[in-house]
Amino acid sequence: MPRPSTGTLLAGLGGGAVHLALVELLFRALNHAPPERWPLADPGRAAGLFAAGSLVALAVAHTRLLSPAVGLVAALGWAALRDALAPPPEWSEVGGFLVVDRTVFLSAYAGGWTVVVGLLAVAAGVEFGLRRRRGIGDDRLRNLPPAPSRVRDAALVGVALGGVFGVAAAARVAAFGVSPRTAVPVMVATTTLAAAVPIAAAALGLVAPAACFAPFVPPIARGVIAGGEGGPILLLFLGPAAVAFAAVGLAERWLRRRLDRGSAEPTGTR
Image 1 (cartoon, one colour):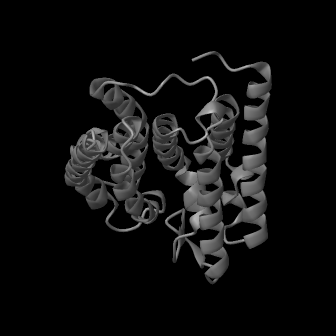
Image 2 (tube, rainbow, N blue to C red):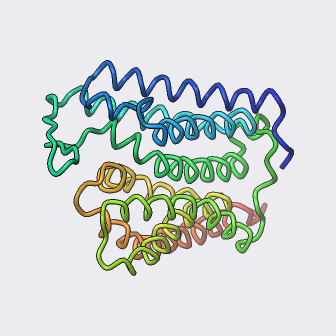
């Protein structure tokens, strides 16, 4: 893949700044968190939100993939809407720590930006494969290789991108507390596999595994990004789900081959 141009790098910097500024404005407008929880008051959060916006802008400007930008806007809109529709939370200090009586979704979004980026990596991988294989605006893609032709190569692409999501999701859940700690590497593996299957399948032109993965995104947002109950169990459950995704993909591939073989058979003449 060619190196990003100066214009692309500038677009990345601009995207990071815009994303950080927008999240800060939403925090101030909704006022559902104390000022010390606002992004610009926390250098770590500010850097993370800037990085998320920058990575998305870089990906879109360099490759012309659309799903990272659409997904980031959707994730931020989801968090802002959930907070806007909920009553103001009650914050209090217990043992020197700030606690709140309900989930503040914008705060969860700011703290879980790595999981958001991981999900966007999965979406980008699926979009890449389907656009290459199905010719959906394929001529508008830039600086991307052809879709892998071998299952092994497609699997490597899936594991590479799925691993971004797997590590981010497991780290986020571990930050809320997981017992036993030895479950964390297992969650990395199960989550990576569940994301890798639809990416690899899309690289081979298969749609069904990605369609099966999509319904898991809202529970992931609630259980992992927002730290809701059941996050660790959900990530472990993605292991069996990955096997199911693979089975669905194999069934779709078999069906497509049967249909292609049937359409290729000569009809004969009298």
